[in-house]
Length: 206
Ligand SMILES: Nc1ncnc2c1ncn2[C@@H]1O[C@H](COP(=O)(O)OP(=O)(O)OP(=O)(O)O)[C@@H](O)[C@H]1O
Ligand SMILES: Nc1ccn([C@@H]2O[C@H](COP(=O)(O)O)[C@@H](O)[C@H]2O)c(=O)n1
Image 1: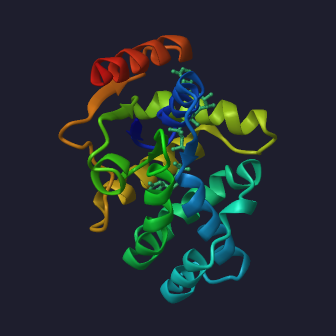
Image 2: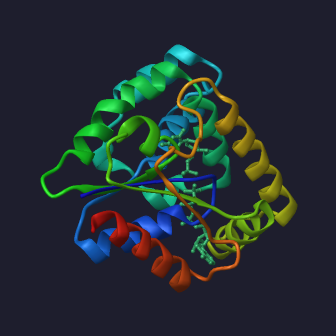
């Protein structure tokens, strides 16, 4: 079974994707890490503004060496969102995501365009969201917990800016697929959100 999970930044989709993958014994791909890795390469080369360089970075991405801890910074979230708006970057990362989803037994993928572009035929699709202030608070606590020096206001501003860029781009914008189930986790703790997500997937399985 393929489970496709989309939603805006820090909505909790990765947490739910990991929990669902563990529950069903499926492999999980956090597709945001791919764009973060491309953004990181471009930043390191001083070429974030260079579209051709970002496409090349995406084409030569080695997914076996992705370091989630190093990639989950606020700076790389922003860089990822910049390169992710470029059609050539998205095209370069399409096949590997589809191959991952096509594994025997299925997979869980989370991102922005999983239900709309990468796995349009997935039987179970969730669109996970939460109010921006709630998402900012969760992400602020996470980043501070990991030692980043950042303010709540800066995190909220980053989230709003990324939401706007991700939703407004012409190539694979952040969108709820018509057949995705909306799950607002604003007033749900992690366990309650997982129970709700599991119920949605079970209903689709049945
Ligand atoms: N329902 C919840 N209640 C409280 N905290 C949550 C909940 N879901 C997730 N979190 C916490 O919020 C933060 C963001 O969650 P997560 O990384 O799953 O979001 P995401 O949508 O995958 O983010 P991104 O798009 O940036 O990858 C994490 O610190 C996570 O532990
Ligand atoms: N399927 C995807 C996944 C991610 N992006 C872009 O990457 C940025 C970082 O993603 P996180 O999930 O790690 O926050 C995100 O803001 C998007 O711009 C994407 O376009 N498609």
